[in-house]
Length: 224
Image 1 (tube, rainbow, N blue to C red):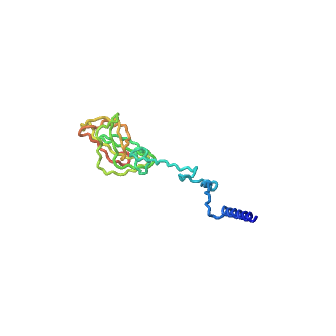
Image 2 (cartoon, rainbow, N blue to C red):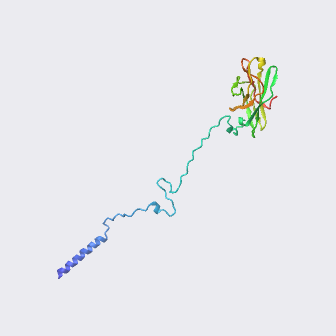
Image 3 (cartoon, helix red, strand yellow):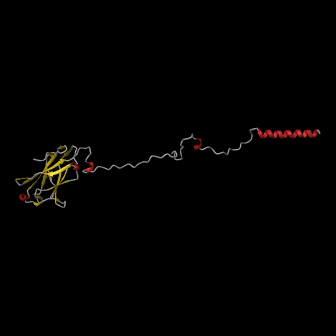
């Protein structure tokens, strides 16, 4: 009977020791937590947009880059440059005309007039260009020879004019080969576009030793 009691006590002691080992100690390894880690979206405060892998928040639009417009460069004599602030008279600002032909002592003198037809004040400096042309636009005779006077700036208010003298020897007197132009092309100083004026002055020299045509600098007014 005593042996049975000791055996029962021993069994209880072993059971108690196993229970203590299973419940305490800290010597065992804890099982890894298999629950998923919260994402940034889950941890962010409500209403906050989170950044994506590209660094932009979902729903954010990156500003578009519009290509730079190449400003085109300015072409001398173009009508688009007529408002430029350099103050020069452009072809588009002007109207050309030809004054009365002065015939005297075998010489022909013609005032070539440029009038400011724009609403702004502009300036002319130097010599205009001039060329006689036929009905097909072909030039007749050589380019004019420039005079020796010093150029000066002529300021033209709207409606004001400047003139240059176009001179040549009368073909009937000089014996030069002659032709009757359809028009005179007049190009303002420093411009490339010409103004066309009908020519009513008769024949002009276009060939031979006496075919020279001369042109003076621009001066204020419309001629003598």
